[in-house]
Image 1 (cartoon, helix red, strand yellow):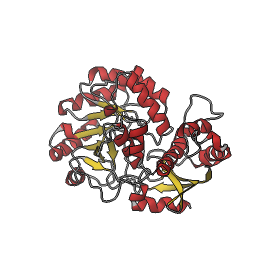
Image 2 (spheres, helix red, strand yellow):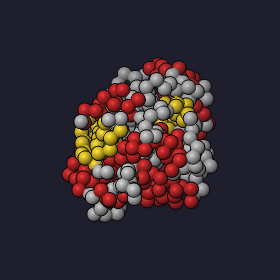
Image 3 (tube, one colour):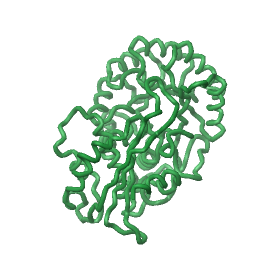
Image 4 (cartoon, helix red, strand yellow):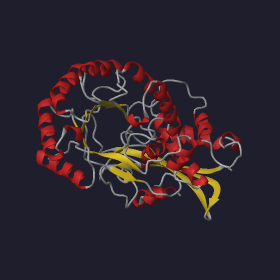
Length: 387
């Protein structure tokens, strides 16, 4: 078998929302389609992929470097020993040819985008959902029929007051979510405390609320914020400081008494390893949010899971960033602790299969081959524009 063509297009993620660092008004994402010469149900198998929100479309890297490199590879360099399917590990090696170690940068996003499409194609060729393929070939054979998801929202927006924030969170609870997340760090601590207390009146308990500073704080600010919210006993306190400032994370861990989360902006096995070695994270209480679509893909993500096991971490403490179907498949197939969700924002990428409602904080997955993009009509309509 072989790859026939690879198409890429940059599409906007246009929104007026902002977190403590950026707004999303000019954010873009790459969508890709990898067409193979394998025929299923009278049609060629096509794998689709895209990069998660928060990083711009890596179109230049894809078109000038990684897509040509993959297309130039011989079939034996990208397929399994039998020549019947793509081999994601071999493809990863092809894509990383002539790439120096370190300084990972945006190439992680470009490769992660292609990797998603590769895995979609692999599962389609096998004729099974990706979560089933992962469970049977890479996991313990068990599949989570439903995956825990929390509603990520609480963004800063023009003219959004406490009442509007409360209405937003109430809407998530009414939609079946049990835990919600809100942004902090984009205002003074005093103002954010008012926002937190307003949300707590809706969700009822700190255990139902997650807060995310998006790396905004220096060490002094991170400790001050943690001290201000510690009595609420929040579900977690996320990304207080710069994601690469492991010393900040370690020192914060020494004084903040409850669960913390970070990792969505660490894009390689080595960065993840350094966090575990030097960041003071607690494998009993804390959570890791590595996003496969931003960090070289599922191929690298499984290496990270292997590393975590060596350091005594359970995959149940991994709840990926991104809020998309790819991470949901990984969570169901490899026994992660759950997945982020973006109700109503970052569309059509955010969210899961149509007609699969969130119930008691959990959502199911369709029994169709691949990642399941075809079960999300608006997303699939966009992806089909590539061919």
